[in-house]
Image 1 (cartoon, rainbow, N blue to C red):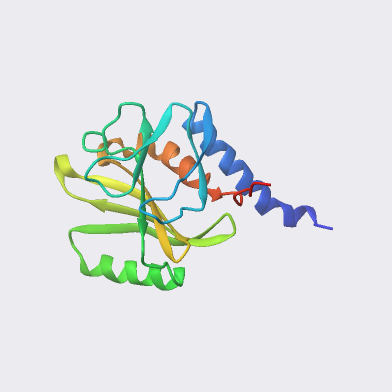
Image 2: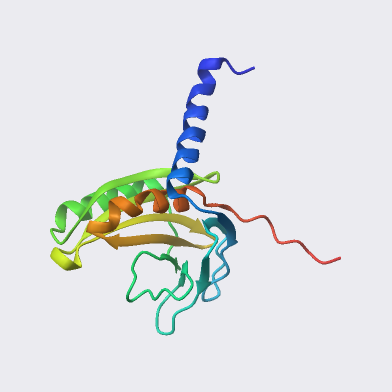
Length: 185
């Protein structure tokens, strides 16, 4: 039997997730991520109910966002980007990102950490790039996907990030393993 003090961390996590969803506001729907370029993406994500999934000619991956939104004009869409490279050890990936951050003045990663999502260890990253009008903040989650990996990226103009961060956090916090495909009888 769990002691009440042992339950506190679990309750805190549930409370924080509920607050993030409330702050993001609006109705949500679960969206199973389809295979991209032949690579299975075994995850489900909760997005605002009015968001849809699309492929953009000439762009890699999938884009999820409000109907009619264009990735080239509105960076605040969810970009699902598969990679044939496996994630490997998430702790080593975190160390490599921190080392690259220290050596690259063009960008910074003020947040980089191993995160367990749906029973899978991945890497959560907040990255700052650009200056002035081109300044962007990106919140990313890298997870294993089959023999490769997948990046879930949400980016915004730096001036807009604080307003969009609750939505971005609720989306990335909602990622779950997709249920196994049902076989026909």
